[in-house]
Image 1 (tube, rainbow, N blue to C red):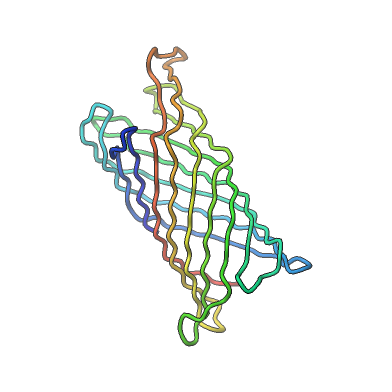
Image 2 (cartoon, one colour; image 1 turned 90 degrees about the vertical axis):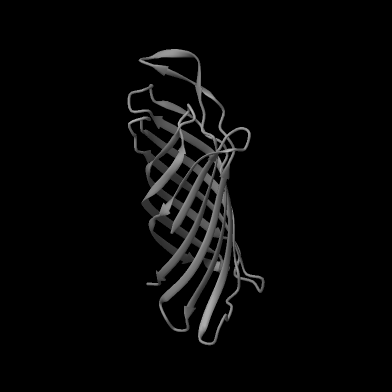
Length: 233
């Protein structure tokens, strides 16, 4: 997949962008229930090196790299059998993202860990026939965080920070298709995550609060474009 992450200032200006490819692996299992319902579980891991283009707090241009790692797990429930309009699923899950921003000669590095609990809904279309000999589906998913924690390590410059992050909102659109009778499936996915700036929290050094000094996570958005190749077992 290709990811673009952007942080914005309180006035809406761009603070930084991180762009680049990431590799992802995902597993999903489904268990039918009596009455036509179903339970499903899925988990994914992703990682990659992204190009960082931004500025220091003093306003100097800063170019470096960021290692991003992401992991998540979800439980999904389909309360009713598929209908003519498709399938409705409810979900509850956990999503973690780690950003390791490499330090340079003019700026120190940063280790940021975000962990959130999510609730959401997913709609899956009835089977479609996009072309002769092919079967396809459309999936739309919306999720929001019900809790979000941030841990920031400044590599000794300041004491580590732990604070509440802002609410995450995620939207995903998937287009899936497979040849008739084949266990292989191809897909194209687009997803968008948005979250406002977090509340500011005080920071300390050596256990002593620094007067008038606070930290917050700026308003943030990520956009992913994913080419999926899947196999059913």
